[in-house]
Image (cartoon, rainbow, N blue to C red):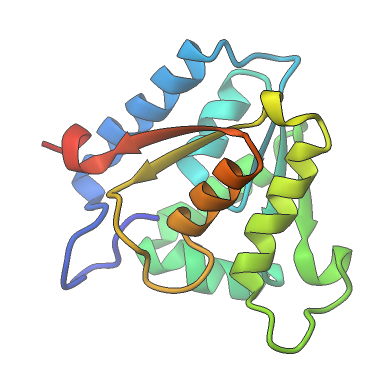
Length: 173
């Protein structure tokens, strides 16, 4: 997610968007991602855009009802991201799954972002672990809350999926 304006410690400054987008596209090219592949993401727009451009089937799995998700995870970086989200969501190769609707509420004491990571991972693992590739644009630090990139990376590694970290400490230099 692009940093909100005024973020204390920059993580993903808006001016690095093109570099990040190129890194994601290059990794998908390296992996040979194409029309016969399925991509899952929790609203990661740069990744989703790159998948849609390649003709992949895309499952967009979001942790919250769409209005709240847009407010908390998309438009906080600017309204242009909402338009990009809708463009991806409305692509004929994209299927939207909304966690509270699909999984019928969240058990007490369960974080929706952790649950969303696991929901995506277990769906991917149903295709066998050797076909699971987790691509993350990440600064190798813990996130701002539960269910972030580190959590997902750790879970993928536990289940023998393949992890591809696009280290922003290196690519943003």
